[in-house]
Image 1: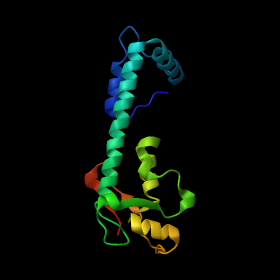
Image 2 (image 1 turned 60 degrees about the horizontal axis):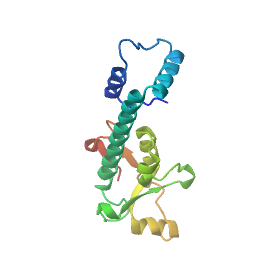
Image 3 (image 1 turned 90 degrees about the vertical axis):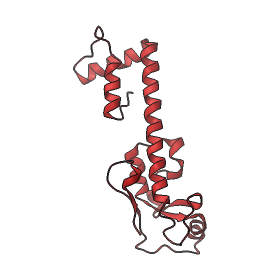
Image 4 (image 1 turned 90 degrees about the horizontal axis):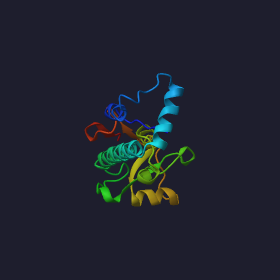
Length: 161
């Protein structure tokens, strides 16, 4: 399966083809062509895997920047602001698809990552443990994490609250 993550990647992907190996025009034929080229051409496969690795790293950096930007606002329930003490709590555990702290191993798309963050609040570890122990009850209007503006840029991050 071919994953193209940005306009730069599309241009890079197109540059992988030589003039004598022109790409077919129909989507079905194109997919078959790419699949065949990927399996038969070791140099093409190596360049493709390099692009995939580069795009994954770029997305990982964007996700890290998003989390760092949200953590900069501190715990939404107490004054704790130290980033190493902060985590993300899913307000409704039934909606949880994955833990946002495990974004590196799961490697979700940036859109899925942002959608999962929207189900969370940023809390310190003490408040997080108190919530799970039932000692601390979240207010019904608990502010959720909001990521606004352009995707993945630290300058456009906000957390309600």
